[in-house]
Amino acid sequence: MIGKIRGLFKGFFGAFKKKNHIRLGIYGHPNAGKSSLANRISKDWLGEEFTKASAIPHETREVIIKEKITVKSKGKELTFNLVDTPGIATKIDYEDFLKFKINPKEAKERAKEATKGVIEAIKWLDQMDCVLVVLDSTQNPYSQVNITIIGNLAARDIPVLIVANKIDLRKADVKRVESAFPQYATVAISALKGDNMEAFYAELFRLVK
Image 1 (spheres, helix red, strand yellow):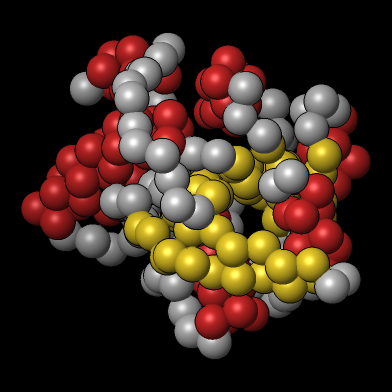
Image 2 (cartoon, rainbow, N blue to C red):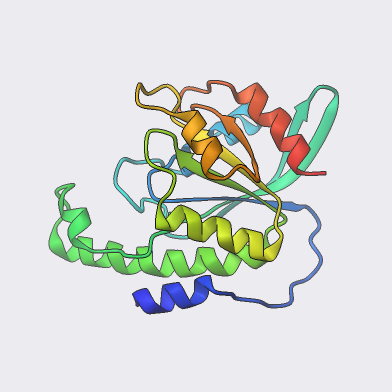
């Protein structure tokens, strides 16, 4: 199954119908804060939560879409469909779920669903107009997963904004994230607390031209 995931990373191309609205994808490794960002955007502009966020890895195991979110910033208006994707991983082991006191049967089922979710997320890359890559700013950004995600987006020439998340934590190092992928703009936020979201929305408008 791992080989299948890696194979899909190399390219999955297809023809899709013309989009009525911009599709903005959220990608990143598990627990980077993708769902927290999706929730923050949804709360800011729709007044409701987008999806469930959890400390358990791979809580999001399927692609979730919220349509027609309209964001306003400095007199401008932008409408898009927000696509939250499962956390990307090159290896998913059911034993990782046992650490969270999940019984073995459920852990194996979650691992199976998470693997399918990764494959689905990779397929969706070809339908994205722009992508937010959410990185945990307290962790080393030079991971195999992050480099692979960025590489696939670069190969598809998809506009990217790096979101350095969790700046409210003491170990956050935004400069390390910026230096990891200098070819893309980086914005530092705390999706959970809503810190620096005005700057995030300003960068979002620059991304979607």
